[in-house]
Image (cartoon, rainbow, N blue to C red; front, top):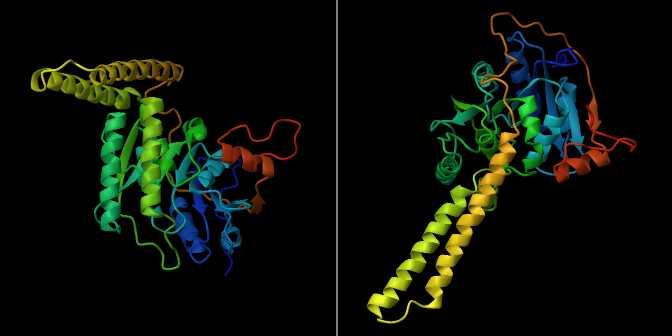
Length: 355
């Protein structure tokens, strides 16, 4: 069956839909058809960009066969690396990111885009009706609570990969994004701490397609999530970590000293003094780190409280098919992606980001 190309002919489309994929050959065409059906109902130019993260099946070929723009990693790097490749190579002013396995309903894309008219990033928050195991639901609640403490606002879904964001904002955070599944954690906390507006749209995540298999390992990736949260906390809100640690250490030192004086009828002791001195040192380090972080964010200027580029939903969509082909990332672009750089290849060297 012949499929028309699923991207608009405009060289700079309004919306780029990015799908990181690995070994999704059985389901990718159906997912792309659903996305196409949704996007054609909107009055905006668009492209669909599939980043094949080193699949050993025909994922890239199947995506290209139905008209998607495809970029391939020569080997598996990680879900976050695929997203970074997509962000770098996307042509649209607005980026929509979702999984290629059919878990995220493409029919909710218009809802995210509508909310993006008044916010800088919109995340599809999975409801209780979504298909998820008990341990994953519990873990997500813990992540959400801890992230809310770090950034100072309620986080509905920290780890959802279904989101819409303005391209210039997403590119600002590329150096911070990890190559693993924890990229949603990083970009969410970075967005909030940077002063950009964030909102959530409730969605019902669907069951994984029968041919798909979860690439997430709860224990390993759970530990990585907490490490990423700690990293973002120390980068963006250091006092949220150092202040409780210093207060706790000071209290332990003081309590132990008082215990020695009144209960044991002995001297205060060096242990108590060391703990209290350590607490003061931790507080000063946290205070200095907070000031450095604040200076960093003071350089970031948002000209208006609302984004300047907005989408209109009052017209019917007009889609002009355009063909494209599978593209392989060059070695220097791949190295830049793995190392979290934005520059790609330096001028004068062979290769560069494929766009």
